[in-house]
Image (cartoon, rainbow, N blue to C red; front, side):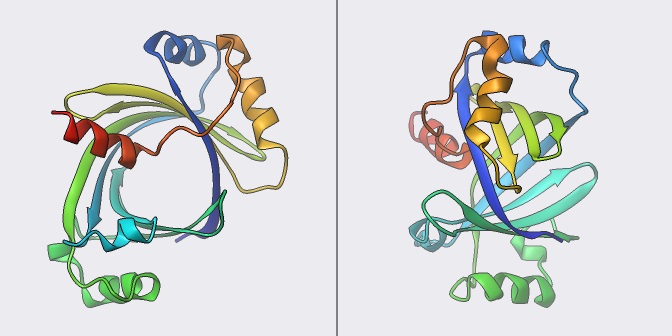
Length: 185
């Protein structure tokens, strides 16, 4: 599927800010996606500042591997798969994983959560207004994902105006938040 450079800006929202933004735009699409993240027993993928997940959305299962590219972007490798978990991976899927993570030979689930994502497409990228259920906690965020060079912060700030918000710094990833919520149970 896609092998691309991922650039995204994201900030956390309150429920009220989320609701305000949700009602300020005509979103193009709403999808529900369940993400399960995996790592090795010794946390090798985390040590590499990467992530490996299976996403279930729109009737598809997508394997995604994210690895750092530089300080502000990640390389993202995606492909549709038939398997629902590593126990069902074919040799072809493991070969694909080994192209990007040659040291990984066994995986265990480390986090799973469901996100309702409202998508607003623009030529430069897409706005993703997310409500995520981590089981014990629900949280809200806006992500601006883009692949075309432009001032992403300016575009995100224009989008945030109805809620009176301004982007100041990157929110932690959903995986990082899931791990914090898990530790605080």
